[in-house]
Length: 371
Image (cartoon, rainbow, N blue to C red; front, side):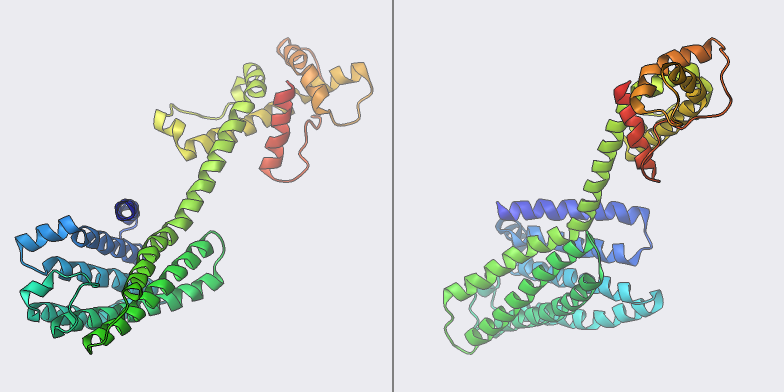
């Protein structure tokens, strides 16, 4: 169940990053993350029992094991490329990436040769059940593990460095990744020691092997969560803002409707929005800002008539209260429509307590509620 969930998460993360790559095809950072997730996703099916059996039957024993490890090595290589490009200019980054291809290529060649030198009966092994007395098996795991330790340690160092300089929500994702990389490096180091002991003829307690595997199994989903967290947190904040603007937009409807009936010329250009625009984040934000501006413009124009009605009840204080404005607004609009005279000087109405648009909209919403 956990493996299936991890596969789904990897696939979703890959699809999301490919979508980003389509919009920014020359972005080296997005390229590195996308290829990292691609390699991790490709390693998943050949690591399952069914996938490994199919590949081995199609090509030969041990092919699935070799491909799985090659894809994992590729994943950590592209993870390292991400940090290389993040701290280097384009030309320097390309040169360093080309240099890093050398140890990756050597590692893949060595594990391929080790697999070829392994007796066929020992090729489709699991780490726990593998016979490390066979030189090919031991060299396979030692070489792949050594590269994993190196690449993951480099990535961990840069992740910690960036986490100390970053703000939320990125810092949370980076510390999750750092925790996952720490677990991966620890698991790889433990497996290197266990492999060496078994190769030299020593006995290793089974709980030690299972503990290293469990540490790695927990680290991989934690790493994916860390990669997805910053974007997910940002998207969640965007959705919350979208919902707030949509709710306030509807809340302003009574005030906007009353003003628009008398001042239709104040309506900003709308065009003919599609249903997608009506549901999109930008479409809701545009309508929210437009309605707030139109409400404020209408209140400025009707304020002299409101001031006259207020003066009939008691002397004006210079600013009309929300309750008083709501009580007299419809009568003031009717007076304006009838062409009744009023002073040309505008009167402050429902002024915000701050300088931001949100403060202004908050007062307009209170007026709409009172209306």
